[in-house]
Image (cartoon, rainbow over all chains, first blue to last red):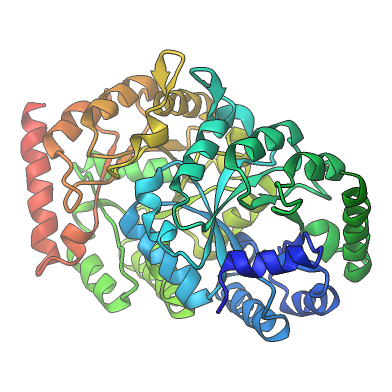
Length: 253
Length: 253
């Protein structure tokens, strides 16, 4: 079994940077989207909330969706977008839920409780642990932009994540809606992967994202789109269009 | 249907301050704990992680546990400890999962994405929205204690929560392991409820918690214990012991 980073890097080596957010508990829709797009993506990212909203049936759909990807496209890494984060003892239970029961390759987590609380996640060296740094929502700056001494909180969080990364399994979340912050965060974290939501419905800038977010190997980005692809009349065309735009921009950045 | 705050206040009026954390997906154990303790508590608080860890069976146990409390002790408010927090569109799905599907009275949320993202929660005026401010884990201070200008981040978060509270449905989480921070937070938030985990296994100080955390009405605290009660040989005795200690301290604080 390859690690999350190995699977992801193999996709980047093929020029694939799109991550599709499977933000619907409709398993039939998910099958269609996966069938049409798995050859174009570097990752799939179901968001737990949309499955939990449907109760037990939703949880079943999440498991089925994960198993369908593992059967259809086992080489595509799977990120559970769940923004989890609790005290250590509780995070051990989340690790069991996410990596043992659901069996995904990576998870998004919240930094608010600090490294000590996140240890159960950080110790999973073969998994991807993707820490929220600067999020894509309009009000993200309320706390994330507060100035500590001379720099904003999100930069401090990025510096800490860089230091926590002794297992080379960490990544960060930075919204496509804030390209200047993305540039600064790339400077701070070096070559580690950055998951960038906010392309598509949220209006993030693709060119600025690539220009400011690529790492020293011209890789390192997981560019996520959800509603703009999964609810498109033709998800394959929507994904191809985004893929082509990325290829075009990659020629000159 | 009474609101979370009304149900909680009714329990405080009866001198009940204990919240039991139902942190096990064992439904038979939960039934036993509920049967033995419902007359002593101001709330129950299942933590989602321990149910998710058991997959679909765990989710079923969570629903069964919630329904069992609603049948056995409908007047006891139910808090889902889930530390959720995503962008607004996703939080709408969490609101559906937590309040429509599971049907609890309150939920814990993370502040990192700010008020704008939390709107779907904040608008539920009859529910309790309990925001992480200063957590009980040993490494909580890594970000929460960073100084913004002249005060730590957790105090800024407390000030913002106080300002967000136009629907009188907010509460905050402050660990029993940090009584000085609790004192400061009580000064900031006024009379709003404070959920205090960390009594019992985590070693929080009960006397300091009551002294520093009670509000102007000598109420306002949800004192949570999980492992120390649910895994005790006799959960009723463990809960009675904690209840008695609280009564004794209340005589002189």
